[in-house]
Image 1: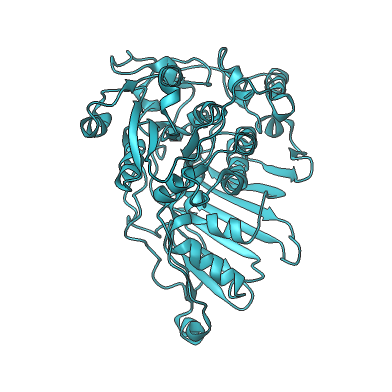
Image 2: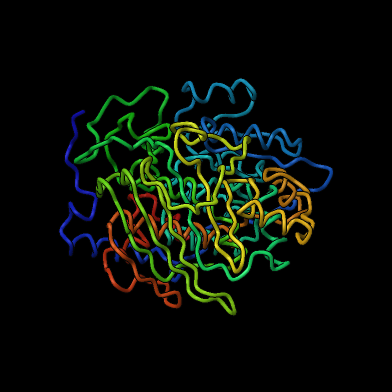
Length: 478
């Protein structure tokens, strides 16, 4: 495959120019945010269904729409996709043939804003932010796939908007409405999980970028007739269309996605992050980055996250392993992996492919736990210890609603989002720091008080990222 040279990564820009451009983007931060729009969020009455507008209607976005609609709690009132009519959008279009269609979410809000209660964003990572910010500023509740946003700063702005506009805001993280969430909460409160000092998290399935080698952005190709490429790019800088960026392949590129960590980290160590009150790490070290590239994610990577002492809880080191051959060290008594048969497969490869299925090991005081992803519950290892503890385990309550019903009921004021932005935000920012460490293949030192990376100016500038494309700056001021 031929490649076109294009300067958009740290290694391809003069250091001073790169830092200057990104520090300049700091003008679009919380300190200078100004309310350009504003409408009170509406709690939908009990007798009414939530009027839902859906951005991204194919692939994962289509799955979200079907799951929300299946709850019986919403009406689908608008469909929006930059590639409207492409094969992956056909199933949803057939389900809702008479629903208005748009290719630009801005036009959708202009025309139908008054008819919309809530919005979904099942789109590439880098496009979560503008859709969610515009929706919240208009008083619309939002459901956003994980990770919340592409950069650390965008997550900050989205957390602030959730509070400012008083909306229900849910990050798609199904495990927060399934057994894993309620078990981890109950076991932590009962002291079964306590004084955790070490977590091993791993995702060793094949990914789209495995085997890829690039030396610049992809060579331009004719834009499909169904695709609004300019709107697809949203805040990103202009570049020629190539099919290697769309339909999930965007996840391979630092510019558009957050890699395996952003894709699966939220499903693997999310409950540990919340109920152990980990917050933001003070160090992230790129221990391994096979085939490191400033453009695409490593072929395999190991990241060491260090979280400080929190109250009476000891420091925690969380080590992340991705890459087919980059298998984690596991206890001798690990046994069979924990696999939830209901989890969706990775974007490439099957969840039960050769090697260790995605999961985690949690080392606490006196007990070691193994777990899988999403809603899969923890198991105490070895089995002899699990049998000994069986009578001492607290009762785990059943979930009152699945993740999709939880969001819609929150729109109606009946429940609170279990993966609200104030919960999901620090988790997403932890992953964003990991992505920066992967991108630069370096160690980061993060000051939790000033919220700055103190040992690397380029890494610190990446908390904000490159300036948005001309015409998209206003989304950082909402």
